[in-house]
Length: 118
Image (cartoon, rainbow, N blue to C red):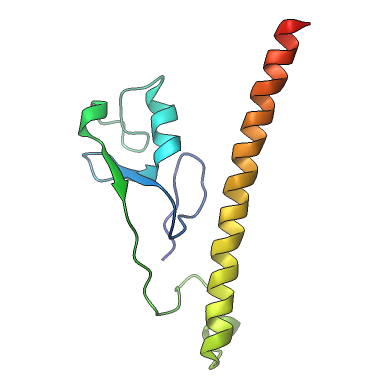
């Protein structure tokens, strides 16, 4: 299983900053607090909650077993090194996607500022 943040739809990676609502739903910390800037509820179930009820940091621990969502061909592979490289690449891909989205959001904000000036 590869859990995702339902706000940004990105898969959680091991070093991601993850927060949890009191209802139990988890999100990227940045996504959740951006949501809280306009809404005071869980983004998933809409349960009312206060910012003080949020667990700000959760830590994931990766199992050495291969993820069930991997393709059949990789899960049938007997080479543990190949499996580990595949997992590492999946995690790095998700990190790069997250970095890209953050930079894109920053660029959008800068463009808005430029438009205000002109």
